Amino acid sequence: MLAVVVLAGVLAQFAYAPLALKSVPMEFTLQPGSSLSSVAVQLHAQGVTPDRWRFRLLARALGKASRIKAGHYTLGHALTPLALLDKLTQGEVSTREIVFIEGWTFQQMRDALDAHPSVRHETTGLSAAAIMDKLGLKTDQPEGLFFPAKYYIDPGKSDLSILHRAYETMQQHLDTEWAARAPGLPYDTPYQALIMASIIEKETAVASERALIAAIFINRLRINMRLQTDPSVIYGLGDTYDGNLRKRDLQTDTPYNTYTRAGLPPTPIAMPGLDSIHAALHPARSEALYFVAKGDGSHQFSDTLEEHNRAVARYQKNGN
Image (cartoon, rainbow, N blue to C red; front, side, top):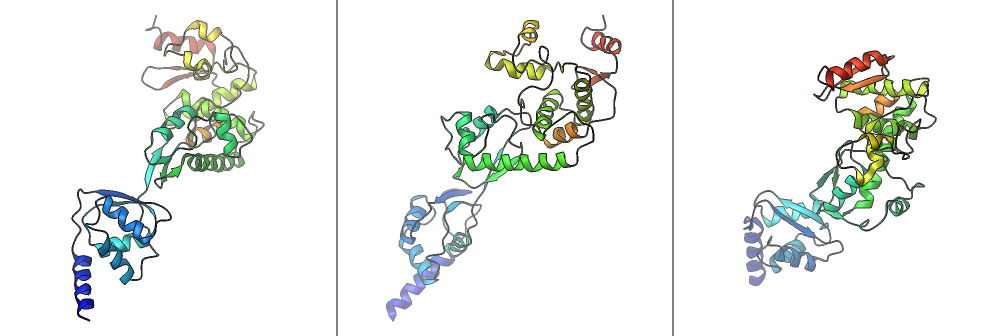
């Protein structure tokens, strides 16, 4: 009985005394499938608890030995072993975030996944087509199919699962916008609208201009005028693009050269955000066919070629 009383006193003192953490915040990970003994070893090895045996005894005494959950945890302040045990049994794991930016290409998305320390990398070395196959998607063209947003992830989450979530999110947004689209648009499929949205995304960062730029490209499609959009040409140049778009680039035919080929390019050229998707399916009412950059991030829009040439002279040729 004396031994039991002494042991109870030791455990009580341990349970209510704040842990002496090496640093705050303190991060640690408990591996899936760990037994209580293994959990105690991991906590001690990562500097969370001062020894292994007292935490193990406390968990058994409180009947929580089998309720500890694996995951990545963050301790924002020194807490007692009792509070720590509550945290571990409630599974208050830390989440991380990864952000995919509107206008990124699929390769930029992959680079972000590969560089994220909390992501489990299952796509390293795989081709784009192989990744799409692992996702169960019947296409080898991933460009534009994933929704740009901030995603919260549990440490150790597979990059494939994150890609799958981003794909499903894009499909949900695209389906919703397609169902409510304006009448008479020159798209046969939601995918064609996604291609247009990606062009809009790359043409302007000014949200208020997107619907008008959509109208211009749609007006061009309706009269069989070539889209003549530089971002699509640049995408087609791939790694050969050095930041300077030359006349010869506009004259070099590729599937993405909208100066040499009519209609939409074969795939999206980037990840469009929701505003660009909405603009592609709800364009402004306008007869405009032309636009030119003003140099401040915005554009001048024109209905006729004559007006456009004057705008080009003003904004691109110093008024001469």
